[in-house]
Image 1: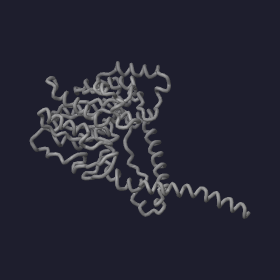
Image 2 (image 1 turned 120 degrees about the vertical axis):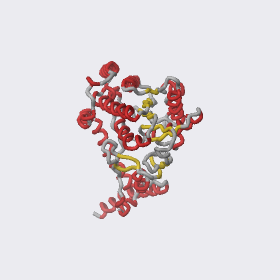
Image 3 (image 1 turned 180 degrees about the vertical axis):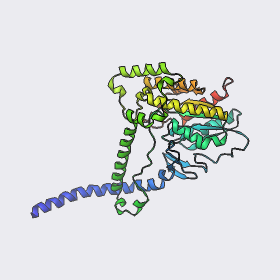
Length: 371
């Protein structure tokens, strides 16, 4: 028994020494996800009273989040305080998700901010308001326009359509930590914090995967899905894409790491929900008298099926009377992979990509034939 006890003690010591060393390294490198959660993003967002939005920025909040410094104005969107709606002048609204919002970018480098400068350089004084927020899909962007944007009486609304907008990629309002954890001595350990973060992120991924299962998506959003027989256009593109995906090898239909599944664009429920949102946007444009454009934000990876999906979205946008802004040729000339903000991320363009987006919108809006 003494020998066994000695062996157990040595075994525990051999385990504790590297754990203690790892703890010291994490402390030295400033790893403190609990503090980051309580002082960062969780103070920038809050649940929205509109269930369609799900969540929204906290008016007046400021701090680090999504790889950048975020300043939220008193109206609840990123950027400086806008002029009052009754102030003379032209205002445009930019709708979108994390690309439009500007994850990992200074506000000045986002395409809406660049668009305002681009227009000014071309002699057009326009105030461009950035109502984007990460994880939003088109229905959430519609709800944001209704809740925040229409009050500013915009003359033009630009909807930044991102490759993942037919899926559910909403950020989780759940956090690995809450305010009570400040008093929990366990979380003085950075290893304990890491374990809490790992469990929370794993649960969020499982929940997101479940919400994107086709049968769950169709059931959850049934009231917002326009039947295929009622779509105003796009039948040929939809049928061709569905046939191409059915003929593709199984791997082409599987969700790979960080890749957007093209099958989302061959889903009657998802495309039908996009049509539902487009209908509502078209009705608002007609009532309020603004022009609405759909900006196709290029996917930064070669995928012929996604390109077919974009053709479908463009056809549906035109059928609803929207302008379509397609900067994919400019992105191809620059090299799509070269415009990634991170090498492993095919969704978010860098500052140079945002410059191309802003230029495309400006050229479209100022073209003689543009509405």
